[in-house]
Length: 163
Image (cartoon, rainbow, N blue to C red; front, side):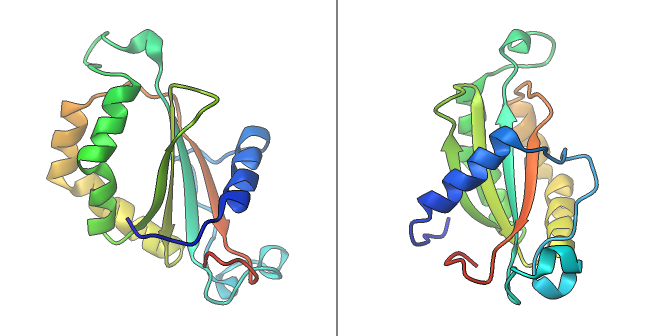
């Protein structure tokens, strides 16, 4: 993972939005995100010309399903899955993994952020990831029951330190 200057205040605002605003489910349509030139006027006014598409994902383990059916793990196994190879897989397929966090308000929730050139690059990365046989094996090894993920798409502002 790459190291960036501290952006705790920005992340706090994003997480606050995550708690209060609507999210887009992973299976839903990905809204345009990335450089200002690829966005509708209502979104592009404050977005940088070289902004990337950021994706904040929140995965919550459903403890009631741990150990039932094919599910073989909880939050510790989810963290191990990321630690072992999931985050690195995304980087191999072209995404920048900005960070992975343990939610301190919800012990069964993992939060992570990725960055892409734009929405088309995001689609390309996810397509490669989904087809990766290593992902199939890793998911089987750490089959964790997750609620529908909360997903937020963002473009950095023209004045943000994180581009």
